[in-house]
Image (cartoon, rainbow, N blue to C red):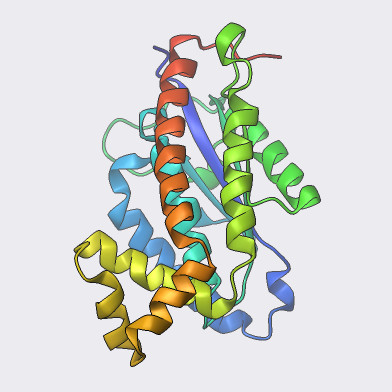
Length: 243
């Protein structure tokens, strides 16, 4: 395996500078990044930071590629719901760095100072996601032969999940994120606990999840995480991407 290969993630907060709640959004974003950088620390080659006002960047170890889905989902859940209705699009790029090896002394590198094909592919993927209003695009996984369609496979799976999410109302998104948090803490009685927290009848939560096809989204995400992990391993075993 080639250790220099990394997975870059770039996110764009679409038209966030026009948000009437820009100051509150920026505060919430800072809290979100602090939480994600702590919770997902083992996956990062360089922590997620805000780089250009409307953009987020991070660098992940390729053998933790499934955590890219976690980051995409967590950022989306945090910024689109009852409090904010901020849409975010993402680009993922697998490739090498041209700025030298990452530090081995435990210091966290500044992702804004890194560059290389992984970031160029993530940027191209992000620009395509912006043009086509898709949730996330993936580039750099495709290899010759059996793995020639990995980029298309991963991007299409992100698109399918993103299309379902795009149909959610802010309240549906809020309930979905709340139930997901409870499922992560303790899968038993998640909907009932959310209903108690929200002071609504459990049927309200149940009907909201049903209307938003939440069960389908959960199962699709589980498969997508597996696909990201297995695709990264396949790409690392054959480090030369398709031109």
